[in-house]
Image (tube, rainbow, N blue to C red):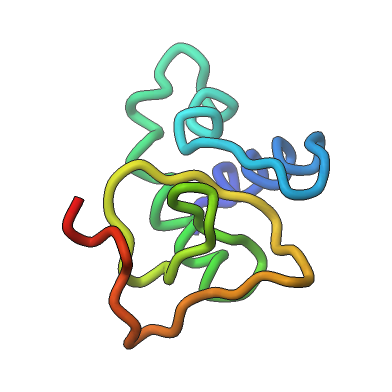
Length: 97
């Protein structure tokens, strides 16, 4: 995992109210404001690793999704007590998008 990306994720999320989220672009820009597009590809694998470890939630349509099976536009936030993350074998509701 990229420690710089991980630190940026938790730094940004630490400044937000509980339940608020950040985009992968926000994280990439925090790592390198001028060259953020080069950093963007590093954000997803780090976020997925953190989600697998239970330290982060991946969101689609503002709902937690299985970090192994998501596509499209996504965001991330810190876990909440009442989060229900879909099981690894459950189909994603928006896979057809």
